[in-house]
Amino acid sequence: MGDMSDVTAALVQTAAATDSSQQRRSVEKWADQLAAAPAGGPDLVVLPEAMMHDFGGPAHDLAAVAEPLDGPFVTLLSAQARRLGATMIAGMFEQSDDPHRPYNTLVAVGPDGDLLGAARKVHLYDSFGYRESDRLRPGPIEPVVVAVGGLRVGLMTCYDLRFPEYARLLVEEGADTLCIPAAWVRGPLKEDHWATLLRARAIENTVYALGAAQCGDTYCGLSQVVDPMGVVVAAAGDEEGIVAVTLQPDRLAAARARNPALTHRRITRPPGPAETVR
Image (cartoon, rainbow, N blue to C red; front, top):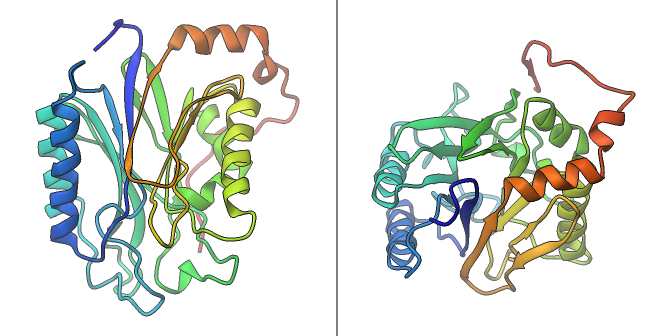
């Protein structure tokens, strides 16, 4: 597991299918691979957005496959987290009180298998000719931050990355690491946007940024870890695989001492009551 103050992380880059049972087998397969690593299992495992079941085409009914937070996907994820002794974060479609539009949700389960948090995607991808809001419901503005070792990990999903105010809200809630599972659609300059925005969020907030993305025909891959000074310390191409990295709280503290920008903010917004986006 490495130094007690450090957090070993594994970002899984894979292509999801529109088959929930196949995806549960995929989670098990990746957990098998991590469990067999010579150095022992990681402290944190991050799987992409829509790991439970891919988006499919625009006509694919996501409401029909959505699950509750105690459904088969989270149950399986909890079992694998216990097996690895790791915190696991993954994307799913969660039933909501709108029968036609579930939430696009990140779930975090701890090494004891307990649910640590569920972050429902706030900003829906109605952009670049796509309309996520036709099939999914936006989540409330309720920043979710979970503790992993000596780090506090803030959860945001894919398109949320384009909104710096949401990343800053997570930081105001104590996050020193941003975890961004994604299914970042390929397209002109899209890959450049992904890489640039991950570095920007890391630099402006002096945080680690963990981008775990789907790959395959539709999505760009390029999963990567950016450190608090904006250095890409580990990255993948566009093939399936695991990005392994050691996150160092000491490096984080040193970056914030060298670049204390967060202490120089003149425009701040104290956390208020939850606001729901409709």
